[in-house]
Structures are given as structure tokens and as C-alpha cells.
Amino acid sequence: MADPAGTRRIAVVAGGVAGLATALDLLDQAQEHGLDLTVTVFEQASTPGGNLQTLRQDDWQLEWGPNGFLDNEPATLRLVDRLGLRDHLLRSSDATRHRFLLVDGRLREIPTSPEAFLRSKFLPARAKLRMAGELFVSPRKDLGRAAEDPATDETVDAFGRRRLGADFAEVMLDPMVKGIFGGDSRRLSLAAAFPRMVELERDYGGLFKAMFKLARKRKNKTDAAPHGVLHSFHGGMGALVGALADALDSDPRAELRLGTAVSKIAREAGAWHVAGADFTAGPFDAVVNAAPAHAAAAHLRETAPAVHAVLARIPFAPMAVIALGFDRGAVGHDLDGFGLLVPTRERRELLGALWTSSIFAGRVPDGKVLIRAMAGGADNPLVMDLDDEALATLALAELRPLLRIKGAPEMVRVIRHKRAIAQYEPGHLAGLAAVDAELAALPGLFLTGSSYRGISVNACAKEAEQVAADVLVHLETRSNTPSEAVS
Ligand SMILES: Cc1cc2nc3c(=O)[nH]c(=O)nc-3n(C[C@H](O)[C@H](O)[C@H](O)COP(=O)(O)OP(=O)(O)OC[C@H]3O[C@@H](n4cnc5c(N)ncnc54)[C@H](O)[C@@H]3O)c2cc1C
Image (tube, rainbow, N blue to C red; front, side, top):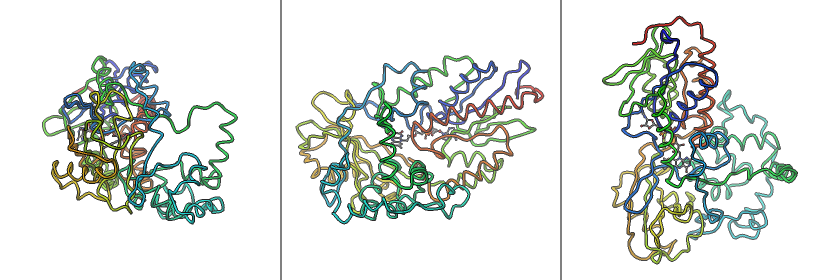
């Protein structure tokens, strides 16, 4: 715990964006509070950043995981500024407004205004009428109680069917959930995955009512777009974790231990210890576990059995990213858009495909285009058994007629995520409430990362600030703890 000089010691387990951002926020907030503190980050991989890695294959720039982030989360923008990356931000092109869905075997652009939606052939007239009926669907009485009463935890699909009808749920919601979570809308909790939807129904009585009222409010203000604009960095998303790691490396209060897999977090005589196959470290005043839930569960098997039980049950969807590079002339479609998503009822293998070279400039050699197909997800894990060549062949077979692709790709790269994204199934929030209850009895132990309260980079950045603040409160309230020698 506090060493003889009064320095507080914090361990951060895992150096994905969640762990790295938490470590930096801890150092910054400690400085603001005049608190002496050191942070050690334990990361099992030989490079920091977790899913955020930008690869180069010849002159093609590829993302291992996230493609970008929306610029509507102040915590991420504060992090960008803190790291001096504002000038490196890369705004997505305006083409990304055009998004496509596969409907009855044909690519159709998703209408962006209510008028365009009414005119479109996107859904049959009866489905549009049912959607309009949303105005008259009364809100559920038990909204917002999913954490206390899992029986009220509605799935995304059930919510869609109840408020907007079966067609909307199957054609719009199902592929949206696949695009964001690689998930199955019939198995995801609305309250955990899309809490804003629950708030809108509860606070405004319905989605259309919320839309009208919020539009009126916005007219009276000059707010920025509430949904945000997709951004990355000129060097790709890897630039963010590269800068985070550099900031930690250059701070004498921080240590980034790469190639250091943690297997256990333990508490002895009020102090925290972190151990792996060939090391033990501690004592620490606090440990922030930012590893994915499946790994965090293993670390806490003995120390926090209730936390272990909840975390071990959080499922993860697998995903394969299949990057295909072509000569521009080989693709008949103009690729003027963000990409396409595939509803389950279309019975295809792919979840969708992003038209990466249309989204961000500078990712491909001149005269080339890059398409990033996604396969797998909660719904179709067995596709991951295919080898790389078979996955590329499958992606090409499905995309070829839709995008009028002639000839073979010039560049192929398959990236596999065995456990890509945590699935917030019904009961997720009740599970987190049980986790919080046990953590309350284990002062100094904190959990963060994309497994719990938001899967996006933005959610990780936002939670990092909060967790760092919580750690500081913990340190300040325990400031009279007797010092122990540092091992
Ligand atoms: C294909 C794909 C596309 C995505 N697209 C987007 C997108 O466009 N926008 C967006 O906002 N988000 C996207 N996401 C989600 C995004 O990747 C996550 O928000 C983010 O990477 C989560 O960061 P994290 O630190 O929680 O977890 P991770 O990135 O998974 O990092 C966890 C870290 O923990 C380490 N670790 C694990 N076990 C141990 C252990 N025992 N000891 C030490 N270290 C350990 C791992 O090595 C890893 O570095 C995407 C995800 C995937 C998979």
C-alpha cells in the first residue's frame, strides 16, 4: 500500500484502450488532486491496445478491430486533446450518410428522412402503417427496472416488435444489432445494449413522440449533431493507443508491463496483489481490472466468487473481418456510402461489409478500393471454423453479385476475433448489480472495459474517467491507512 514516501500504488490489469485510458486518467487526476501515485499496467500481449491495432499490408491500411468512433462523446475528445491528437483526427467522408441494407435480395439505401422513408420501397405499406401506429402504443409500466427485476429485461427484438412491428424489427433492428454487436437482437437486452431507447420510451411515451419533441428542442438551440460524425486518425485507430502508450512510457509514475499475463488478483491484509505464471506484484492500494469479462472472471475466481460467476457467464460473439482490396475498375458498384448490412431473414453468411476506402481517405493505393466484410457473430459462430481461404471465397461469393465485382481481389487479409464483442444478454444489468454488491465489500477493486456498460471506444473512454475518479475517492477516503513496505 502507501510506501514510506506516501506514494499510492495502483495496478491496472490489461492494456486495451480501456486500461490505457484509465491509467492515464489516474495519473492526470492524481496530479490535479496533489496525490502521489504510481500506476503499473499489466498487459498480456507484446503490444498495447487490445482490439485497436492498425496494420499495413503493402500500401493498404487495415484495422484489426474498430473502424472509428463518433465525435459525440466529450470524454474521447478530451483524451484526443490530452494526447495532442486533435490535428491527426480524420473525419469520415460525407458518403457515409448513405447506408444500405439487403432487402429481398437487393441492396436498398436506408432512407434518412421520414418523407424518404414513406416514399421508399424499403418496407411494404402495411409495415409502414404499423410503424406509424407506434404513436399509439402505450409505454410499458416497468421501464428502467431491468437491474432490479430481470423479468422486465426486454430483448431488442421484442421491443422492436412491440413498438414498431415485426417487419421493422427484422429488417432494421436485426441488422443494426449485427453491425454494432455482431449480436442477435433476440438475445440482447435493450436496457443494457441500448439504454437510450428505454429512456426515450419512459420519458416521452414513445420513439416518435421523443423524436418530435427532441427535434423541436434542438430547433431552438444550435447544438452539434446529436448522433455524432464518425472519425478516425490519419494513422488509423492504432494512433490512439500508440499515443496512450507513449504518454504512459514518458511518465516516470507509470510502468507498462507488456507480455505479462495476469492470472490472479488477490487481497491480503487489506492490500491488493497481482500474479501471473511467473511473477507476483504488490502490494497495491487498488486494482482496476480492465481485461475482458472472461479473463477478469478467471482472475477473481477465489477473491470474488460472486463477481467471477457473473463475469464468466457473459458471452462473447466471435467475428471474422475479411478485408478485400480491388482495383477500382473491378467493382461495378460506385461504393458511394458506408456499406451494407444483412438482415438474418436474407439467409446469408455475411453480417455485412464496410466500404472502407469510401469512409476514410488515404487508406488504399491510388485507383484501388477496400471492402471489409464481416462474418460470424452470435448467430453464426460455426462460420469461424472455415479457414482463411474459404472465408475469403465465401465473402467474395456473396459480395460479387451485389457490388458487381469482376475478377479476383488484389489483397486479401482475414482477421479473426475469437471473442470479439461482449453480448449484453437479458439479465446483464441484474448481473452487474450483483457484481457491484460484492465489489462494495472489496474496497480497492474496480472493473472497467467494454464487457460491461458499453462496447464502444467512446464508452471505454467515458468509463475510464469515471473509474479513475472512483479510485481517487477510494484513496482519499482511506488516506489514513497505515503504510506497508513495498515488496
Ligand atoms: C471487429 C470489431 C470491430 C469493432 N468496431 C468498432 C467501431 O467501429 N467503433 C467502436 O467504438 N468500437 C468498435 N469495436 C469495439 C472496440 O473494439 C472496443 O470498444 C474496444 O476495443 C474495447 O477495449 P477494451 O480495452 O475494453 O478491450 P480489448 O480491446 O479487448 O482489450 C483487452 C486487453 O486485455 C488484455 N488481456 C486479456 N487478458 C489478459 C490477462 N489475463 N492479463 C493481462 N492482459 C490481458 C488483452 O491482451 C487486450 O489487450 C469493434 C470490435 C471489434 C472486435
